Amino acid sequence: MSTPPAGIARLLPVTPAGAAMDLRSLSVHEAHFGRLPVVDGPRIGKPGSLVHELEKSGLRGRGGGWFPTARKVHAVVESAAARRAWSAGRKPVVIANAMEGEPASSKDAILLRHNPHLVLDGVTALAATLGAEKAYIAIHRGSPIIDVVTRALADRNDPVTIELVTPPARYVSSEESALSHWIGDGVGTPVFGKRPFERGVNDRPTAVQNAETMAHIGLIARFGGEWFASVGEPTAPGTCLVSVSGVVNSPGVIEVAVGTPVSEIINRCNGFSGESSGFLTGGYGGAWVSQDSLMAAHWSPDSVAAAGGVIGAGILWALDARTCPLHEVARVAHWMAGESAGQCGPCRFGLPSLADDLDVIAGKHAQMSDVHRLNARLPLVQMRGGCKHPDGTARFIGTAMHVFQAEVAHHLRGHCCATTSGTALPIAGMRPSPVGFPGKDFK
Ligand code: SF4
Image (cartoon, rainbow, N blue to C red):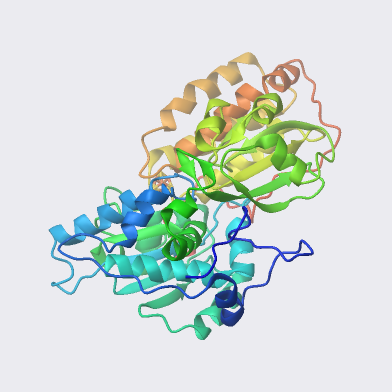
């Protein structure tokens, strides 16, 4: 076993000069991390022994939900055992989710650009411990990372075939049931009532893990769970990647120990470059938090939640105070409405209505009744969709109405604090809303 990485630069190691190491070559990767050890497979309906290290590690998925990885592994194996999947020739499937549907996130792309083999090692290790027959890495169509991963795969000789797939660049196509749906049936829309760990790709038990989670698995397979948990918080051990953007001097992706003070994260980005009106945490399915609350918090699921936010896929955006937050929220709400799969009422009718309400409130002729109407509509879209897309969008809007309540009051008086007509939050190609039923743009 080679020496475990010291410090917190585990996924994105740096050179002595402080630059990100380029580990795209398999030989350089193995010289740095050592070879991936052989990982044993499942026996008598139990996962291979890697699951014990995952339990010790306390690793939680870094794709947004922070669900315990070991529990997901057990769930896939129990589902496979109940259906005699291995003897019936319907072995489990593994998917590395590098879709990065959140426009404000770039952590998976940066990780794969610098360190693709560690992600692929995690896929290989997870596939082995599940006795999987096939594995996939999903990157959204058109991503520049596709070339990097294609070359990395060509260098490898993994015991389980890893296929690169490129689903459409739609927000909801990165949802785990949508990924399984696209790989199995060619349609990247969420599926109701069937969770991938039970019935995923072609109805096989399917383990979907985010690309960053896979990279952590690649390290745990080498260095063990105790080493992994030697940094971070007891309830969320390890390091994590954070996409930091907005009014900071050095925006980018940084790796921190879970539980690092948010103020320290901002310092690592060389401080604020201007005044911020509030933080977006977790992306467009996440939550807004006031600057004072978040700067007093630590970057862990519990601490950020206590401040009113959500880590989600590791997004931290300091909104430029020169822009109108209500215009920004309205613009993103329209985009989120257009990104839905258009299969359920909350997405077909609810999200476009919420976005229209926000347009009115962001204008200069809003009335209190417009705010009341929006607040009354928000709960109507929650817990009623086939996936969490409307819930996340409602949280994004609802927390904005709370954090930016002074700006709402200003608009009700016919004013706006913005000193620029520019926009801040990124969105990709606005789609019309309400959307039609799933069409070819989900294929
Ligand atoms: S809630 Fe929205 S995004 Fe989710 S499945 Fe239904 S229509 Fe699609």
